[in-house]
Length: 159
Length: 230
Image (cartoon, rainbow over all chains, first blue to last red; front, side, top):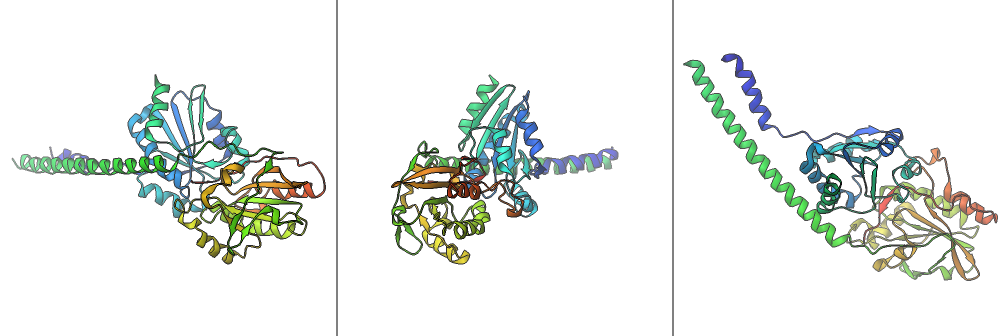
């Protein structure tokens, strides 16, 4: 019986700890090309944001709620356009402070005019914007989101 | 018996642990929900921007009378000698705008004498961005030594007519008869981070083309910017 003690203690510790917030994974323009050119079998909700962008920060809770509502049925990808120099000083501390659970990537590529048209021809560079991809579906939103609207878009695609 | 005792103690600790973590999680969930609610309410209050159409190349841009940081009202019609204008919607709070401040000053110094002065306009509502208040505009312009007018779009009536969506956002105008015709819309250049690593010097090329009577190759360009908030 004594052999189980560490296991039980481990269980206690595990049950007390909360899930860890995400850290941003640095990506390049080739990852944007791959992501936007793909036809995913799972719904992808791709949001372009930055820590300095107030309307982006305001809508993050809606994306987090979407992630917690749909779990593994969808993929929520938050792509930060913060400068890579601010990764450790601003971006990761922000993710920790707000306990962000969706996956976060930081795009390190200064020539925005090269990746903006890959995402959508209607995008002029203002953020936030959101791209929802599912198989051949490509829906681009040049707007701020509330959870209700995101939920509607995702549930419509899942039907 | 001893193992049973230990097990009981462990079971009790485990139960307390699970309960405590459950309560904690519920609390944090509630907090998150409140945050979400308030965020939703905020966005409902502030994001009902009208559908913006704005100008296209060849359109006639409106004149305006906006207050400069020196307290005087500025209109395009006051610039009788000008051949056109480099109108830049910009602001204090946006890191992209800040990254371009030195380059905007350089453009003004280079092209003012050739008939194309920079006219900077802050389109933001200072209630949404306190850093973009009229008083803070004055402070920033003094700190950086702006050589151009820095106007406040009070009431936010001008930027929607131009169709500016973000800062910085450039509209290059050329005077034809008494009208100001839109010749270029978009970015200053293609690298906000490093002015020495620019591949396309969009705005400088466009102004140079206008001065030389040449056709502008790229009349519309895109770049990341900070959304203008009403």
